[in-house]
Length: 315
Length: 296
Picture 1 (cartoon, rainbow over the protein chains, first blue to last red):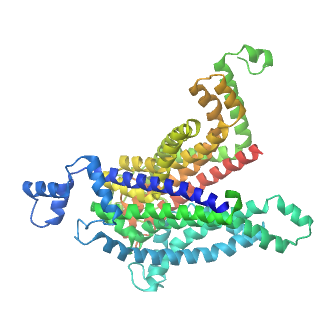
Picture 2: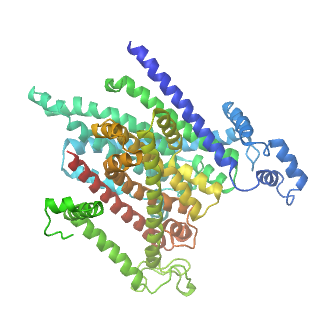
Picture 3: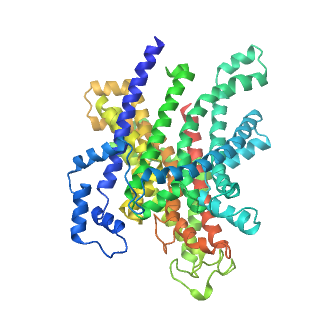
């Protein structure tokens, strides 16, 4: 019966997932369709750069070729058809396939994201656990101060300060560029500090919420010691909201990566996005926007299904 | 109406407008009593900023090349930037840009989100499904990425940035209001009002709005501070307020090349963002704690 129930929930989730994906692609196309400027002229100029301004005939030819003059829904249909086949076309600037550019840049962003997540979580977990285990201690106060200041620090400014202190004055690590692990340290610490502060704040509040649960009183009366109470009951109870938020924060890590990559002049999805927005390279913009949205939606659904298994209340 | 000789009989005789005025008066009084520290602090801060506007002898955009990149001194408290403009003055004017624009964005977002959330929560299942799937679709785009793309495609300037930020900020409000409204819809007084054929706009204004407004204010303060970070971040990337305007992110973008020789050019705008967002966050936390304690 429970499995049957699960199938029903999964079906509803799948339908709403499809609707949301449809909405996402529609919104992306809407932005592309209503972008100001003549797209055919832009393509012509980008393709035949250095030959002066493109001729009228050439622009007309490109307009016919790409179907820019066709009605909205016809264009949307063909655009969505390409999208389903994961065909994002070629970059307007470099004429290389978008998927190749994207995957090569994705690797750099993943390196940054994984390392900063490691740095952030390895500090955030012990910090928040100790802070709740020993309330009003020095570490507790430190955790509170860190999480409220960390939420207010602009990450680009923090990156510049790191460059100034560790790269320019102390000269421990190189400031800009990509390559070795040394190049990765400063960007990953900048993003890792963001992970650290936001996760400390969240895990701490989940643990506090769990330690206020009424069943803990009953366990205490039954003679469960404080250590066992904390490790077996409070931490386990805080685990469900923690997993939920972690999934969503993973998607937002991409957002933090944009600014950090630009500040440290690294390659990656973020700087690729900024550059292609500056040069109005629509195929690349679409690919990144759709990727980030689909990642978010997929993680969200995965978390919901995971919750269904781990938490009987949500069934 | 004399407030000092107030009793139940005179309340009966009041017109509706007077009753509202009285309720407002009593509420402001309690707010002042409970949050006197915060209000005093906030007032002091605003007073200091206004005093700064009145006292500063400098102009935020006028250049003075004889006094480029000078270090902090008594004449220029935070030093001058690469065009010889006084950084302290620019930070004061920047407060207008960041805080003011963020106020516009978060208020517009709150209004749009409230309208959509109320419609979704109080009308039928079809409207609910449509509104919430739309909200989910907007929510799927990470805020900053969507804002960069929208501003970049429409053309990087202040107006387009505000439009983009409003487009990415209303969903939080819509979700919250939808959840609260769905809960209120089940309550007896709403069911009774519906059975009594009370017009829809009156049900909205008398039963739904008063119940959701406080929670919306809490999210609104946090949205305000988030938006300040987004605005300065977008301006730093070159998509928002354009230099030479004195916005904090734009100042950082401007001063970045001179960072190594004159670090004060980049340190002070960042501190301004940090302090402002910190104060707003603390204010939001304070409101939330107050709301939670008054609910219990």
